[in-house]
Amino acid sequence: MEKNVSAAAYVPVESDFRLKNNADEIALDTNFASQGFWKDVLIRYFRKTSAVIGLVLIILISIMAVVGPGMNSYTYSGQELGQKNFAPRVPGLEKLGIFDGDESMSTTTGTKTVNYYKEKELNDVYYWFGSDNFGRDIWTRTWSGARVSLIIAVAAAFIDMLIGMSYGLISGYFGGKTDMIMQRSLEVANGIPRLVVVTLLLLVLQPGMLTIIVALMLTEWIGMSRIARAQMLRLKEQEFVLASRTLGAGSFFIIFKEILPNIIGPIITQVMFSIPTAIFTEAFLSFVGLGIPVPQCSLGSLISEGFNSFTTHPYQIIPPIVVMALLMLSFNLVADGLREALDPKMKEM
Image 1 (cartoon, one colour):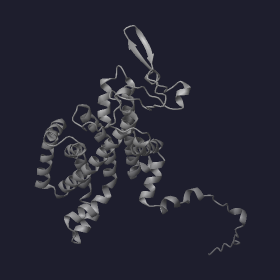
Image 2: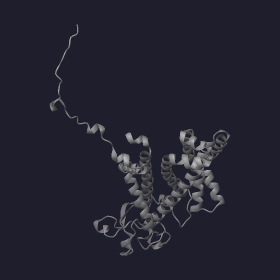
Image 3: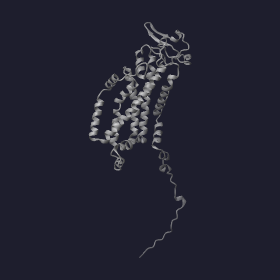
Image 4: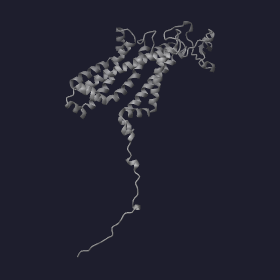
């Protein structure tokens, strides 16, 4: 016996439905999707305040290194023996009681204030950072020394990048006996103290800017080569490398056209970290007397000269120390910002 069940068809009405507001769930980051890699790097870099501050300081110091020596009538080598050891004096600020040429000096009977400008009636003479033991303008010499230090450090860092990067990439790519021989040679080179290499080099060549660059080039490329080799070992078995090799690409094409663009981030970061190291090394060499010959100057040689008169005229050592400290700090801040901006893993941090 069959039982038929009939029911009236239910017709939905508008009140049975509720609009789900899920715009936040399905929204796409169209800004991120439309921008390229380097634009994304710039955006993330400029979001880091310390990195921007470091970049601004580097630009300002670089500008002063170019225009600073020409902002007054003095030269970096000009001597005025009748105007030696003058304290800083700045027009305009002297009326406020600061940078007016007064200098406190310790004597056997106590402390006295001297002003050589007034004693010698040099009312129209101004040394913004003071003058040294030979009557040379410290302002001009500080920015001339900053220019020399920057040229040496940047040139040495980029030459080291080319040597170390090429060495590490070739060593890591070919592997086997080639890698073993190249790495043992690197360990031998790394085992020789840097000061010994530089001293022997300066005995053969004349002291100067080119000699310092060569000395730094011979000793600073090892760290870069190790980073390049580690990146090569990580990438050389990837699918895109195998595809290029299958299509008949040569070894050097794969190294410099396929793999190098994929490791440019760590390479740039290492270069930025190596610049302050080169600045410090150059300053150390100049401080111990193995750097720029007189009358030329660098930040290291200025610090060495100011150190000799630090107890009597401390103002002479302050400008080069401050400039060098700001340079090294700024390059480290920029390098740290680039490391975070170039590393894709930092996006979610």
